Length: 257
Image 1 (cartoon, helix red, strand yellow):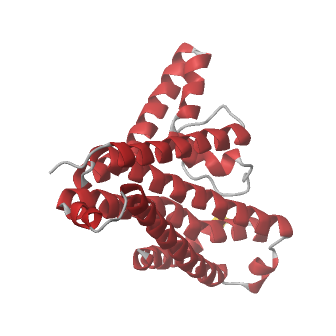
Image 2 (cartoon, helix red, strand yellow):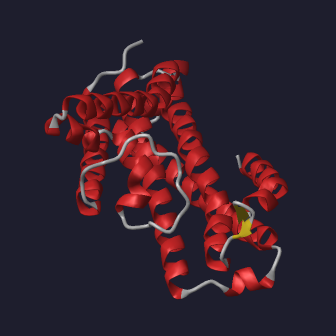
Image 3 (cartoon, helix red, strand yellow):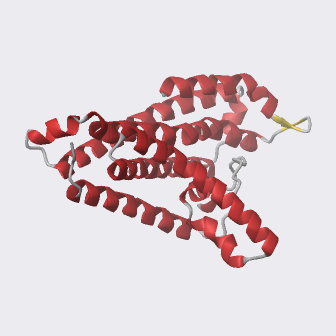
């Protein structure tokens, strides 16, 4: 995954000179720095959640599909204990990947800058916003893991968990976009607020919701009518629901041959 991220980052390095101007005029140093620094992180944000969902579905759902979970449980390991150890393993992978991506992104930002003057434009506010943006990526990854774990606990199959996990965000965004268009056409205030309770649109718009307005537009299709605090509370609720569902089904649901 790091290799994919590096390859895309190098591709951005090739096309970066074309994004350093707007209508033929050079971008201000600070604006260009935001574009340079956020570009690789946008790749991480887009690819990281998908990769971790696949890993989670493979690790948890694969045990059920292959039948190896019965062998592990026969050795005296509890079902919840096994689930928590698998979840911990994925979280460790997430942190290692995030560290690797951070190193790649920092190095690529220096390469993209192509000028010391651009790097000198960094302010305290710039570093605060980039740190906050990295935090939104971490939240995205954690929720992706918990959602994939819940799907694995529900379906107890690699095929089901991977399909459900990868389809969730796509379906959320399509539904959110449709609801927004219907609300705009009918001037229905209730419908206009519903996308704010769909996980996909919320995670897509999270950087904007927490006040990162200096970052380049990231192509969000759904505009949310809620505050950053409300957004974080909805994400927290989803995370708790995913975790509780995973634990309850792992604990209560019998493993069939």
